[in-house]
Picture (cartoon, rainbow, N blue to C red):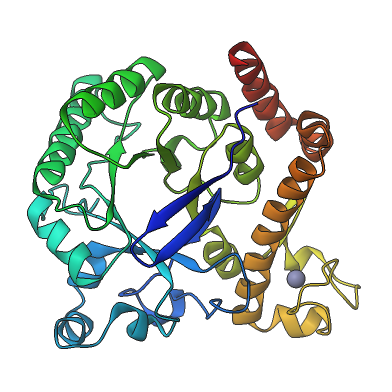
Length: 344
Ligand SMILES: [Zn+2]
């Protein structure tokens, strides 16, 4: 069994893993922003922010460099744990507009607990040679960050790979030449529907290191139990925001349901503090409520898995049931199960 529980000792305090970092879209249009959740969902005392977009947002960056703390700007408690992803690559410009040193400075200024190193995601459309160049450049950026890191925050090297071997070689190379507190596997979002490939890459990363393993961008409802099962320690998600934007209601144990497909119910099938007393129509008309419910849905999925593990029940039996309703995700889980069983 690869599922594991750890405690990270971070500058702002301890963080129990596995954990989800809900994405906080600071620096983007306010309609995309994350509604307040700190203090409302106990296990979500953490957030993922994008260092680059915060630095590039001028009025906010001026406040942050003139005495306002990031937590004040986010309106969350000062002990909120922050993972600052570098966000060094902008897909529209195709150029990296930061350096490892500049990114580290930003992450320090934000008083982040966890620093992700600068990276250049792979693309399905790229030639192999271009993706290989990107894998190597990301590794070099990570080593530069390791050289310049003073040890305050938790430094996580961003790792990419198009096959299990590249992922393994990359982690082993970084482990030999740098000093990292953990690794974060990227470039997963563009291949997210290729479950077989995604699970193979993740299991390869898990096998290559005992250190903290984060997976970027896959913390949605379906992937969450798979990531836990494969021993991933943390993940992040903006699925709850994007889904709400598409009027998609997340249902733990199932997936997303577009609210326009539901006509005649008085109440939705969720007793969370958002849905419990509101009618279907109230939630239909309130995007913030929908976003908050979607976060509760993610926490419910996480709590169920933990409950199954802690109560000594058979996790594979639970996941057999969890995934039986959908052929695609069932095959994904079966693939992961075969690989996990080969290891354990
Ligand atoms: Zn709800």
